[in-house]
Length: 136
Image 1: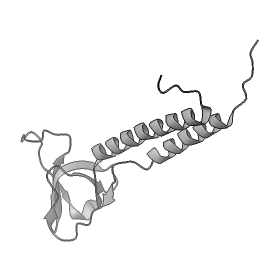
Image 2 (image 1 turned 180 degrees about the horizontal axis):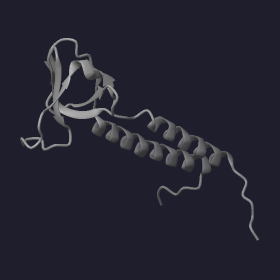
Image 3 (image 1 turned 135 degrees about the vertical axis):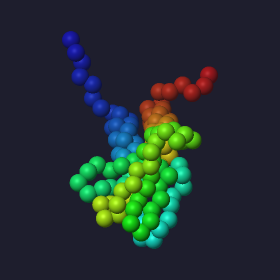
Image 4 (image 1 turned 180 degrees about the vertical axis):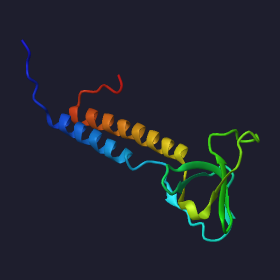
């Protein structure tokens, strides 16, 4: 025989808190933002950039620099100190936009938010349910 369990107020609060934590993690990310390339310039060598080209997927590049007529960069996942990756040159007339971001920082922000959120939910569940034994 299976007994149906009714949800208590603490169960509802815990489900609401977990749903809130899940919703908050969607806001964590690489922080991709549009980068203007109006005048000649460059990005930090390790800065990740997405170069959006007409009719294609974005190219993920590093060591990005641009002139009045071209955008140059190396594939982001190539060796950091080696010359194994050739420089890619894209005519400016084919570039829709350039975005910069930091996916690894987004990963750490999401991880921290999840851990702190679970800790808070656990403490709230113990306080509301009065069933946790935190010490002897």
